[in-house]
Length: 109
Image (cartoon, rainbow, N blue to C red; front, top):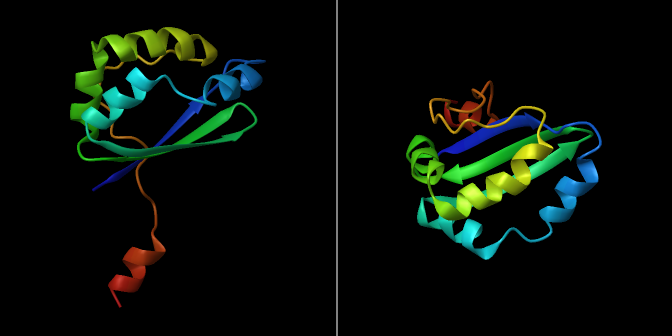
């Protein structure tokens, strides 16, 4: 299962709000992610910068399915305004390209 890394940036002053709403993501939004192949989604924050690591079967298919999913639309209405740039859910991205992996290097030896 591929891992997808993402980097997003919060709007100034929204750090505490973003952390608060992620205390518990709404059950319907979490279920929509799981139903569309997401095994795990982890987020780290450094100031306004967010780093996401997503374990998902098919990232582009997941994004396409969630674009019009009612639970995701509600969730994005809440979380979207906290970001410096809105997510258009075009689904044409592949996340941040992997530069190096210790495990991959070790396997090649």
